[in-house]
Length: 308
Ligand SMILES: [Mg+2]
Image 1 (cartoon, helix red, strand yellow):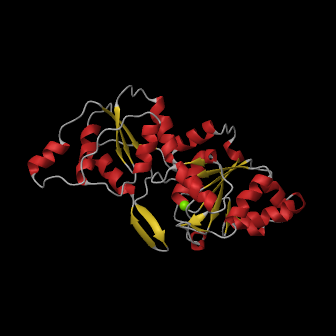
Image 2: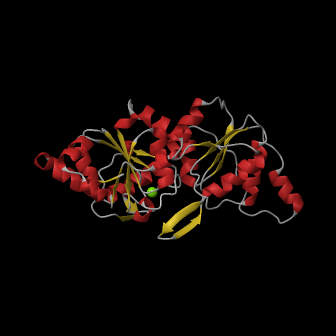
């Protein structure tokens, strides 16, 4: 683990010639709750100027690619729509490769995820209403009947999730041929320093526990997301990728499993004390660490001053 700021000129030259792609997380790396982290826009610009291909990788399916593109552009980031990846795209790509025929997809997720699936040509199964009559017979009528038209269940963050739809998903998943795909596995969603909300992981855990099945993961650190990225961007050698993230389990874990180089930044979910009190798998240790993505720009300026 090397502090990026302490690399000498020779080490920096070697570092910059060791990767062609920079994959960057969003929350905690580019911004925190839409407050841009200072200097990060310039870093993206500089990376492109020195010839690096930049790809933004978020685990959040509650926002559409169009929304991300709009917000990133508004915040001053030089990013094309085609350079943004979320599990939504990996889910669509995965489902398209399966033999779903004309089967429907039941989604525990938010409007942008549902809209993207529909736009990609999938027919969505009907979710139950927000409220049903509070009786056993009504509950049974809404949740027990199977629907043979459903061929896949997709589960991710859904702030309007309710018990009825969760049970309905479990009912469908009792048929082994129904595909089970899941998004982010986080049980805790950080919403500021030392604060977090209940994440989607708790609910997919319920489904997995109840049905004795494992959802196919499509969010970091999933190998399916890695597969999607290398296929889409034609990445031949994963070691030529530098992954920048603020989360150890999802970002450093993803980079480790995918055999990317790892840069951990301390502008989001992780504090510097983690380096002294390492409590994660050894292979998740970052190759490099920095205060924020801005430190990477400082290194670019030092190394490529005359070319920028
Ligand atoms: Mg993050």
